[in-house]
Length: 636
Ligand code: PRX
Image (cartoon, rainbow, N blue to C red; front, side):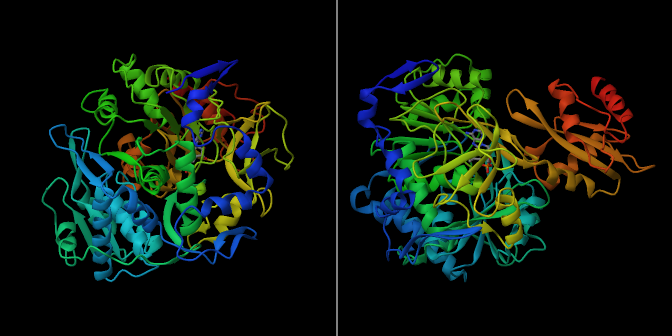
């Protein structure tokens, strides 16, 4: 293994390091920038296509298409494409949370057989190409098998995070009209047995779900309704080959719901062709995946990172990867170190919130973690202290820290330094991935100068793995992503700046989305849930800085006259509406909220109470007296 060389405020890979890397110098950027469409066209050829595409990139603003005319199947690329060379290579190692349970190991051939069998089961249940299948599952191998089986027959999967409440599941199932829901009886989290099937039942009430397939994980008793079945019972009798559907490159592979500024969550749609190309190539070049790597991404499959890097990316590359059921600090704070040591993990991908938690809980890492070669972070800005701790304590000063920026909408990583090129500079994500064009613009659409903050945008030809629309909501697609600078410029809703060398640093969101422990939560959605209660006159939710979680929500509630409610009541509304992940740090009952003369709630002011920033000019407020009242409440 090579060494890192420090120059000024950043680190660079040495010669030895470059030897191992797929990309060893800057020339790939030059080549890609000369003709990004041709660049992606060449990359796409390395995958298996049933039929080659006719047109590489087609732009019909605000829509764009990649590889039209091509026919592909991602499950074929994850499985068959690896069978010849890696039939008996380990694909997936599953680590259960309870330490007294054994791991489960699947070779590429094992996975191939399981996926084929479950694909046949889905067919037998009447699932057809283009149908939507709901997946409400924990971190167990069957979740990945279910995703791949859907993809194999051309069904569209929509995975719902297992910690989401039944109500949140219900909203998502109703938006897609899924008829089949795959779940598990339960799972383990922090030593507790969680009952998932009961939530699945509650969440599928009043939806089109006719059949719930349950994986036995905890072997707890479940209520079996008409049409329900167990996974093992349906899969047992199936043949172990199911012909993969030849999907058009632009057919939808999956829908994943994510939060925006307002209202209901949006169903982000990803396409079969472009997503496969981007998942394969970003995983390969960014994580430098080679045949003897052991890759571990801690991301839950309920989120996009779980889709692309805890499932599809490593499989497309024929990699051995770890999937862990539980929380990384249970039962000991350094459980995650033991997992790295137990399997000889070479590449560790996690989130700043986990890094800060490890730092707080573990401090000095005793284990030498000598197998690690690359460590990476995603989901929210990583502060300098956490970056340095990760670099020194986990990477022991020998592993590049990759800070990877992307979104549910982009399908794969779009900004990060490449391991064989660098630089690795604390808090900077780095350069856009080769073939990706970004810019930072002011509100009028003018490019800002180096070190000046602005809105991060992505320019045509975008990238193949980016979203193709918002499910059943073209207006939202256009307004959210192509509403700021016209229909040819994708607005990320992130604020960023570039340093003089062009390295990008992400500052935070420009909208009302907050990242709580890396989870994307809409303050607008939380407000809607609280407002829907008849005791509440109005409310405001703001994200405030938090040492470990990055951000955390704080709620201000104005009650209707003569109505009473407690913090517990409001908390219940939130946990039932979204889940525990949105639990506020504090709930304040106030008489009024600071508003402009036109009635707009000034959330900015509410946030500043906690950041210690100057409140600014309050003279434009319609009710400046509320500011003092709220200040007193907070101080108390
Ligand atoms: O604000 C950015 C932040 O997470 C948002 C996307 O959230 P989500 O769709 O849940 O996807 C997260 C995982 C890909 C972005 O708009 N974000 C993501 N990665 C980073 C980041 N902020 C700073 N640095 C990052 N590396």
